[in-house]
Length: 150
Image (cartoon, rainbow, N blue to C red; front, top):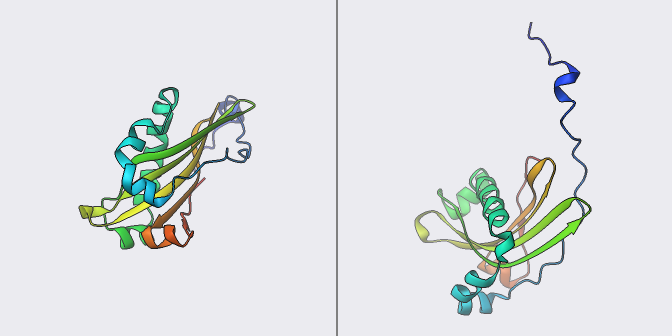
């Protein structure tokens, strides 16, 4: 039989509370994204949030790569690309970040956009939601909610 850890080993773990609603993101319209991507990439995330944004994109990329539907649509080797727009907020001791970013499909032939919401508190950074839309879906204001293991 395996011995279960005593409750004293879990005393320092803080309970995970439900995240607050995300701060409002001013989405960048597709024509602006296509026309001004390089400029947007350089100015979309405040320097104070760059590190958190990089970590959140890494979490988003892991979720993208583990979703069979997205791998089938975009190909293996999906990458979270550059950020078009971001929004940050603080509620109590919870730092919030929303990112609108480019998704590159495996082989470089597929394109999509993602919007992710993450929070960071005493328990670390967590990916709360991730939605993906290809160009047709963006034009029709539709998206796919990626299932997450929260």
